[in-house]
Length: 480
Image (cartoon, rainbow, N blue to C red; front, side):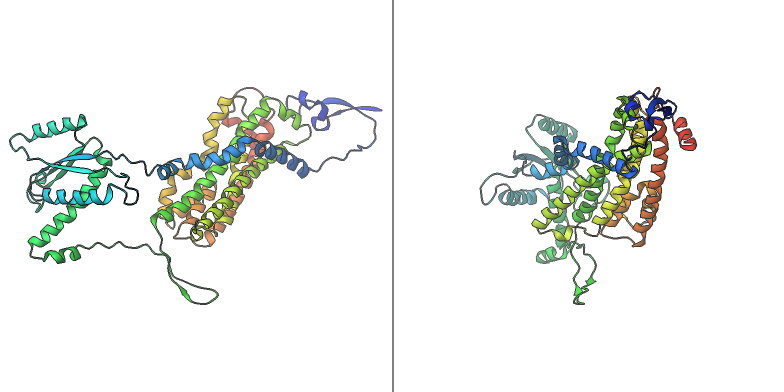
């Protein structure tokens, strides 16, 4: 029987006593016989750790709750607007009109009467669904107009009035000073007031019609002259590959053009938060609780990091599959299959894998350098910058997906997964080569991120002491 020195990797039973890698050694006894228990293959060890991380996440009630709450939290405002759209304040709105032109008040009295008959009560249930607008015509005080305005403002503050409207004397034929043809609406919340919107849409068509009649146009023809036509948004015509017939262009809307890319964008954001974000905290906890030292008795550092990243990736893919399959089923039931961008779904999962592995490697590596939750919080934003930055620019890119700014920014590897998806889902479309070039770039960058993360993780996971410094991390990457 012989006595020999072995490294910690050969001494799993004593791994918890190891304080640094690979300087400490332990003493073991060997009979000189070959090890009868074959060592596990590296990939098998990695996948076992991945399975452990995955099951630890998905076999909890918290995971199910998170699947339900995340879309609610991310789209809470839109859902709330839909659920509470019928919750309207039906209190009558009383408005005083100071008509210095003498041409608008009579029209407003007739228009508000018609509006109240048509919109205030539901025709089927008889329930009041909108507030009634009440117009009070008051003679303007030409001697002291400011005193009259102050008096009306005080009545609004006391709740007696909702607002007052002041119409300039030259509003019909604007000439002279601007103050003579202005229409001013005074209220507590004038900028966001539905009454102001109704007055705006009622007064302006009437003024144009009066000008036409005064110019000699027959009143019956004035409405035809002022007819307003909306420019419809249409897609492009295409040819049916089976029949060869030309297919009509489909009508689109601004809501649809924005809704689909935004949903895809925020779905990827949620999956990154679900799968990659916890890696920083969990790695730090395993390090501070000395769990990592035990695991490193049977795992190499890069296997440890890879297993954790793949576990987070599996969690994200599970959540994404639930949302995508559920979304396709739900929209299919509503008869909205045309809205589903089936051509984007494969790209979504491809870029999701790259994003999780890339960001997850950084987060796991940075987590291995932390000994305190405050250190982890300070490193969160730098690590998540490739995820946060696209949120600041996604609207300009969505509006102009083929612009040079959108193209070059989406080909920058850290931002490619999220920004290329927005451009791919946009109705305008992008050249077929760009997603492939972006994919090549992000694959190479992800490999680099894993290599850099592995070098930092290898040293940081067993390092105890002060807060991590950037200079130290750079040395670890260069020297290994």
